[in-house]
Image (cartoon, rainbow, N blue to C red; front, top):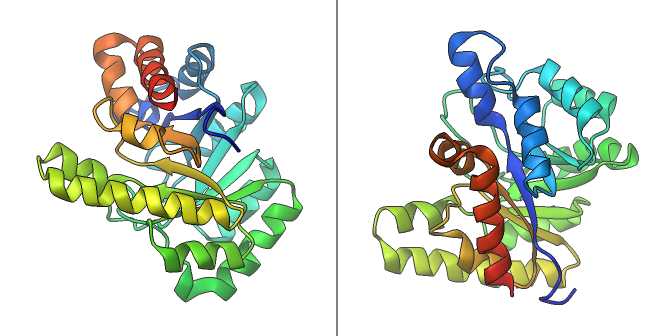
Length: 249
């Protein structure tokens, strides 16, 4: 892979469903958001079906599988229930994420190194069904090596610590987190893993990450849905795409 390879943008539509569920009706429709995202230049759609169904619902996943012309990245916890749903739908990709019911959002990467045996058995049927398996982890050598050993094809590095430090004005800390992600992107790429990055990325934080030549995809959701309130969803996505392409060039 060369640095000139196009960097893909996956748009996470979870929080369109969060707004819908606040009133308990059918509006705004995440499927409509997914179609707009496609038209605006998204290379894929990400949706996290949580165990408590706080945003995306089973019906949303059914609908997305029917209407999408770009790949669906199905984020899920490593549970039997979620494995059955993924095997039924066979999305293009499944991203295994840690999940705690009490958290507001995914707080960190998956602990792979301590659960290698269980996770290796968990992802094997997903790979056999034709889904690309991604593991959402911290930029940590031990976790990357474990993800590689269990048979993941992709890792998604958790960019939350970098983005939080930047937004709170802790710029030295943000630079240190960015350097860690840069090094671990190269390390994972050298192991033969495809590298994605996601969580907390904004217009202010995306460019340095988009410039990493080993990174093939960024998954961005909450910020884009928030920005859509002010700009509209399509313009918000197009601006993110512009910044990514500029940084990559």
